[in-house]
Length: 411
Image (cartoon, rainbow, N blue to C red):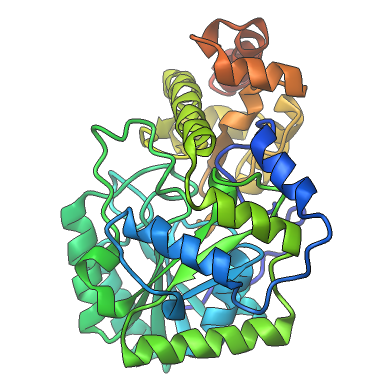
């Protein structure tokens, strides 16, 4: 088994995903940012106001904690990098997984290994495949110590069943792994009533570190902020302290104005909570429309349940795609990005092999190019009836329909 290696083909990787790309900044948060324009940077790991607000945020989600086991940083990326520096060892990931996971391990010179996910969801590995992966890595001299998973995942936008989550976490703990649960998208469920989201920290609190990038909804994605929750144990305290040391060494601290916004947004006042809920509903409507379009064209795609992304498998269209000269995900990414005028990252960026014809699709493609259009999309009773959304869906539909057009592809 070979660990993930850098890709030699294709353009530079896309940046970290967010669940509400392009939505206008909430005026209340813009005012907070402006009022704190002269604020000093936070200490490494976050100041008192941010940490106390983070404790309240997690307590409302059934994960009580204290400020001695919480950290904040400018995004989930530096938090994960600092945490992996503190843990040591190799990293186990799902296939597919978020595109920024593997680079964190690679920056530290650590190997990253992938275990496949079940057919019905992403974000959590198949428990038996996970155990087999751990066994093979150790037989080959590897030292797996961390399992990084996602409870509402990028790129698939799915939520794993609680029983699968429990089985995968029990398997990981049985092998002595620390679980890092990326819960960036936990507040972006399209239908919070019917979707059941379970955090591993609810089941095995002594073995789980939770991280979340707040750019998924609570704050604008251009204002980088993330939080982490550590186990309330002696080992959790050690991990917390080592992570803060790494953040200090990197000088990775929240900017003062952003910290003021984060401390406010984490209390979830009415306007912030309403925006998060409205954005989740909007992305649910748009993601469902994209799902109908791509599956109607013959692609396979898990029904999205959270966030602004979904993951389409175009392997069933291989004959028509090959006739067009598209034989891997790098070429598919290039073709669809040109055709749609926006980045459409291929599956090779998410841990899948380039020979798999997979792409991540985003509802941001439908929001409109201007702030005025995006605000109308957010507030419309039925965003699918807006002219700019209808036109974007038409372009989207034609781009995928032509990929399955055998007659044209044979020209």
